[in-house]
Image (cartoon, rainbow over all chains, first blue to last red; front, side, top):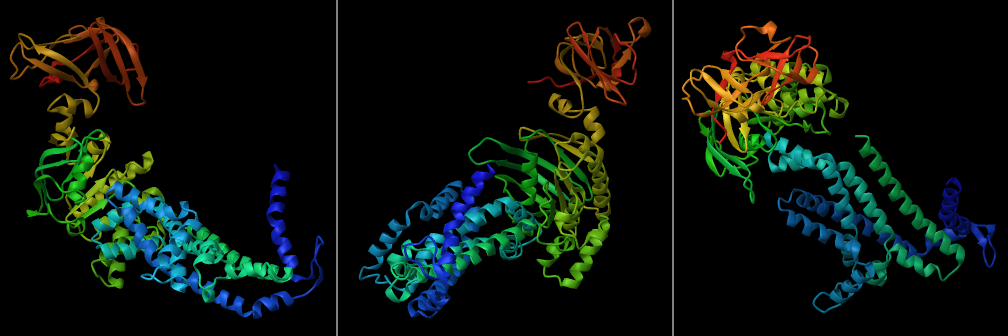
Length: 256
Length: 347
């Protein structure tokens, strides 16, 4: 069992380790490992205007996606949770799970069809890109929030608050929001991690000037190996920071 | 402050379950327990009074004011739930102060009031603790303080003790009674535990299949149940179908019993009730010479329960259940005629 675990971990970690090694290697052609040490690939990535722009765009898209998720997600999850009618709950769940079930390519093609028309000529705008990211990520946040609502017994807490004289607004801001702060945080960091790495839809929907980091990264694969490695490591670090933050938030939530 | 149910009915949508035509009054300061098996409608009564459900018919009044159409938050009724439902992100005192906060009270004043309420339930030292760092009994006390701090017009307890271990439960039982008497507030206590109900309530309401069968003080409920269902639900009982005979007797499957037949006439069907503790145990027929309603038989079930021993004596025609402190061998029982109760027959 131990050996299998070890092999699996090596299998998992080896490509990532190679990326790191490659990003600092001066030359790497037809050998198992690169030769020489250099920081020039990172310098090139950081000074490349298209990478700079993509990096900024990615951060903007992630930020806006998280913000919109937070604003939409909490009321939406709450509405699904509190819906009196079971049919409403089922319908809402199917709607919210659809973007996970449908291949992103299908979703992207739909976006292209609809938003390249003369009536809705938004293809290529950064706002359409953000909207696409919201559609893809919102279900993850909803599921995180809904699971936490059930786990906390939010329904009973609200009933109590109702008997104690709390209005709907009181209950939402005093009970619902504070109770969900940890799952909202960890859900949003998951959203950020997904949004940072999102490639399929971004590649098809983004305009030339609003390309996100992963889309531009694909171009790097056709150039120098060291440059591609360095550019990929940058993305990896971004995603790790987001995922690690999510894990910490989840742990803080468990300690409650 | 008084509570009044007037011909209240409620049916769960799409079912025939609910409660029908419930009427009762609670005096100010009265502790009324509602008991009944699962699905009897006792929780429905509570939900109707809290306002989570609206009756299909009838009215609910508090202090003579019709609250039937008011939402829960406008009713001014304090509730302690089975799960306590404390707010996990607030400390004890913040939980207790919450009803005052939503009423717009300034923070210093509501903290002072909350601390006083916590003191009343003996938890002053735990004011800054989060609910997760309190025991079940302590959480229950916080919930009780929270339900009383805003001086509600009535207090509702929904199986508040069922999640506690046996010892804590007895302590909390006394605590609830003490605090309730101190506050002098009409209290509705819903429980499936009849012993709990009999021990703390001024009056007990027995629910069955959505109907209120009997509402009476504990002793009266136990001694004079209105029918077989109540008799069977409250305490242990020997219950037989019988027919009133001539000259102060009643015919039962175990044989004729001498008793006061009261207003029943010979030939009328009745239900015969004898409480086990009224059955007198004898070593044998010889030692019980002259006892009325004497039966001999063999011991069937025989359970030692500590203070008492509960047994079934198999006699011709059935079994007689008794309770005794006698630890010797038994082969006969007698039933004093004054302890034979006749109830309406099962229809």
